[in-house]
Image 1 (cartoon, rainbow, N blue to C red):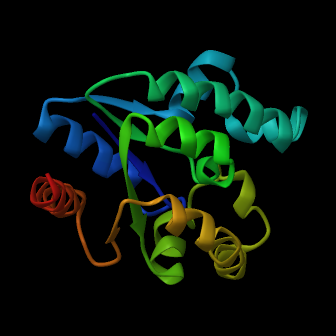
Image 2 (cartoon, rainbow, N blue to C red; image 1 turned 45 degrees about the vertical axis):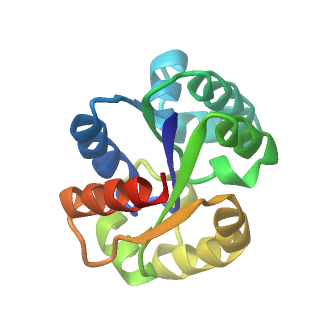
Length: 168
């Protein structure tokens, strides 16, 4: 079984994923990092040069590959749950954990990050809009939800481990 972390940018999917993988002796995979490695191009650069649709197609291939792993923690890019094919692939092999946070906390965590193509020229209002647009897709995909607003990655990882061990 894998554990797939989904949610908005700034909900600490990568940070939590690394801690969770270490604590559970699982492999860590980050779909965004894998995209950069495979394409040798930043996500920002891809959006500018080839567009979001191209990126989403490549992302789908990465998610499909990641879903074939066993005993992996997969930190998914924020848009992964918007494509039902991604969710189908992940559900076949993973418990899906939705990480959430308030829009204000997400803004605090991402405000200085220039590598977020969907946040350009939008700030807090853009985050709120994206959260509203993605809410249903995120919630319908999730097996469990953990609010990371006032938590550190270590505590979030412990919470996930506790919830998953209670469910098994």
